Amino acid sequence: MFELRTPCIWIGTKPVLLQDVNHYMPGTKCRNWHSTEPYDTGMAINFPPINDTVGLFSTDNSFKRPCSKKCRMLCIQISPKDP
Image 1 (cartoon, rainbow, N blue to C red):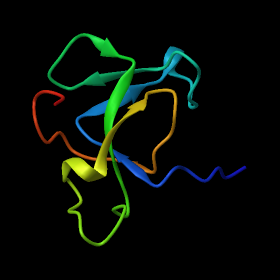
Image 2 (spheres, helix red, strand yellow):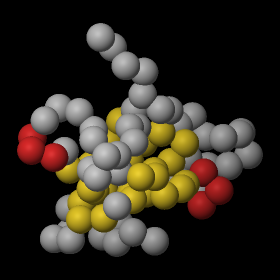
Image 3 (cartoon, rainbow, N blue to C red):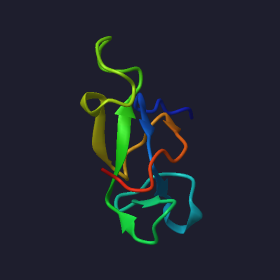
């Protein structure tokens, strides 16, 4: 069954699925490509942006999201660290 994902994009970190299952579970962690430590939250941006006055990667359009939640897509690594 198709599940609609939240209109957001993961930035810099990606969810690490537990036990290689193809779904998100409570306790799912995120990992940055430049780190070895998993995080409970990852940086995401709203897509489309929350309004026409902010840029896609502006701080007004970004937020921390629990890694157990879904986003529509994953973006490339933009910076080596989370802000």
